[in-house]
Image (cartoon, rainbow, N blue to C red; front, side):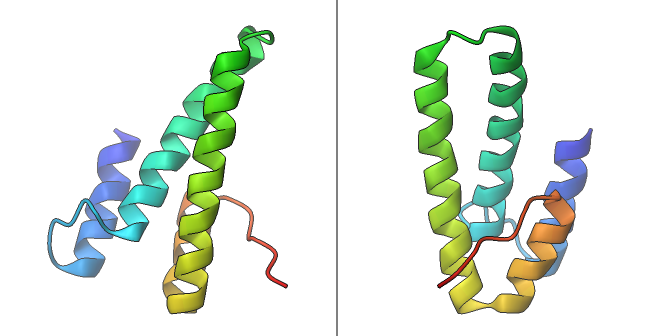
Length: 90
């Protein structure tokens, strides 16, 4: 399973099972975002799911901003592994 493979990669980097890490949280939000996006392609008028998607996107954005300020290398690696776009900082 893809989720288990990425989780093991994240665990190897930190040498411990830390599900509260920023990387794990971003990964978790990314999988939820992908599921909701595929759901919304079928159900275009599901406005409550759209709202939930926007909330999750905002939370992931905050975590990515935090990570980019704290450790730019880990941020770049995570962006590449999850295949998501880089955030624009001012």
